[in-house]
Image (cartoon, rainbow, N blue to C red; front, side, top):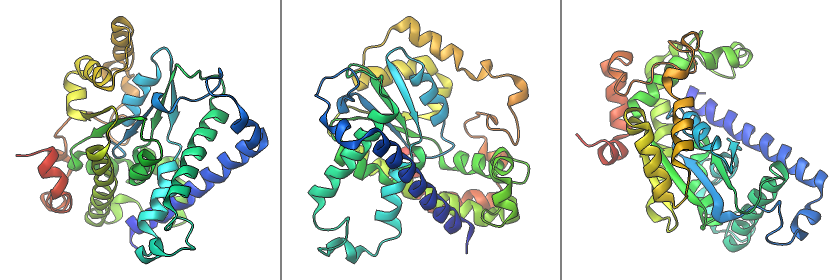
Length: 323
């Protein structure tokens, strides 16, 4: 089985496990009790105050979400994988003909299951963030679940959306470093690599680049498709702008989303989470914080690897990074 397809299977399993874990937690608390809570109660979740961060892995979403989650009145839900749970199954693993059958659970009765996705997200959020008030914001970091962005934003159309984009060549270069032998992802999941459930990127770098580029096109493509049609508050942020002008980009993000934040607090958060504030021993090749250098792919990818990524991601590359 090709490496990128094996990763897809791993993600589907991870999404199902996340679903079961959340479902168990909600059941334990009592789903009926959760649903009976009056609107406007202190522990209710206001869908208008949910801010989704979509894009792709290795695009700076950890950095961005950490800054946003550190703002007063904000809570961070880091990668619930709910987009992967529904999106992987709906878009990847199901014969499209099933969507037209009356018996398939995600089929013709769309108004029913879209509502169920909405309730699932809100009920789970209430269970995990019981102290979050209706006036506070829930930031949901979901780059690896971006394939499900169309379903999530259809289920919660009043929510706000951040589309975080990064040059796919830099994304692939970063992922390749992480998943090569000795990289942080390899070390974190070493048992899976040794058992053959994951394949190190340096075993076949060109095949890895192809697989990651395809996943970028798929996930970022669905996220961009969602961004284009979303009628609520939304903002497109480029990683490159975030690196060169962090404070200015964060100010534009909040202004465009219609969220008022204290300027001094925002400046404090930007400083706290800056690249310069990360200890040197935590940065470098093979580490989670690698180099944060836009255009670094020119040093990291071979011409053949770069051409492969450019060919596969051409539709998005042409639109998001023309020239």
